[in-house]
Length: 579
Image (cartoon, rainbow, N blue to C red):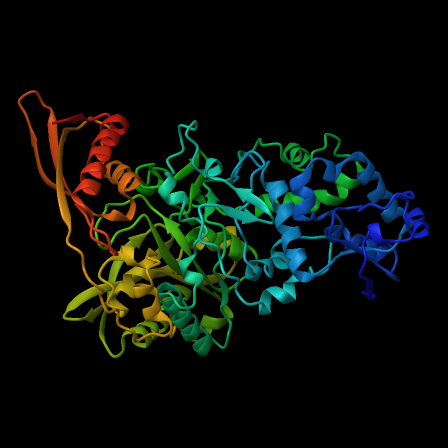
């Protein structure tokens, strides 16, 4: 591509503007990010420029998303390709990332079948590493986008800690995820506040340190074959659109046009249609049965009836296999409604690993594909356990997972007790065949980073991972394994009991969600200490709630206020009768 003049249409001379068909008034033709190439090659390369031409700057999208695809600009675009004037490119690599996010936002916001957050809000942040997958997984009518090389080498950016996400300059507000008027939505404010924090991407955080140690193991043992993804969207769909869904209608809505015969729409359609295929599935693609308990809203956070906060990083497995990847690691925050104690938290971090073998890799071994994959899986994960925990005794336990067969759990004998490290198995053949891996076998594993980090760093309470107290964070500034957490002053707990008659719809997870919504991380434990059923068949539960701050002493006044608010919320939201 020829060198570009670093000036936009607003900086061109009137003769240049006239030649481009824009008239004498200086203006930006496709938003704020366009520059012109002085000697671009002609028609063949113009078609390759379509991706660059249709991507939007975040600034233009925020001002007027519909105007970005107005009729005058459609005509100008058609004229551009017909007359083959200089191509349009983006001003810089960093700007191109924002542009891609902006058009992704525009197209996905209208996909009511699989999608994310609507109406016209935002698509959760993709990482630069994820962008490097796109040329392989999406049939763009272009060459490799300019951000692909940057994606492979760019450093991870720091993520903001805020109850507000920004993607390509577009904000995701609480109302986009926490929908009080949607009966299917059960995402509380406290969970929304954790979106985008991405503890696993902080190099000097215990979760990030552990993630990097695992990455180093696979890099050194597999010569960098494993591709790593650690910033994929945590908001995923439950299932595919119904067969009768009119995808062309969805595309029309996405580009703000009603005439798909429009030349502009024809050029953009392949790109937008491809986006329909990139939405990951939380349950169906990993063969989770329709009646599995994990689909219940008692266990899973639903944004709407078809969209959830991912329960596991396996939600991305099928899409990455379909993209052509045969070795990959996926790390991310996952969300599950759970009990309250020192080892459970509704947001935690998982890592998923997958390796695919072609038939010629196991034929010479004399083993069948499943046996070969199982042997390689156990060898790989035993080596990982030795790297993390040293020379420890290990054992394999047969178990069940919907997406692997056979399935195993690896346990190690550590600190005088057996401890589960991870779950794994040989990937179900149906998953491979549905995603283009014919005559192949694969293994997959999944592990919880908090579970391992608590043991490796001697962290006694899972809430500490979310602490911003310098007495905690400064202890891991070296960014390496082997650091042992030194507890700062442990403040005394305060216990409050609460008894009530339960209804038929009562669940303990719902109770924990209400308590956590009021008290946040000040609640240390919620435990059932007594229950009985009277002669009328009514059942009473008594729960003991432990309040404790990791950073200061709580006053009696604070505790009494919290307990009063909890009692009121439990009675109104759970329809129980307080005793």
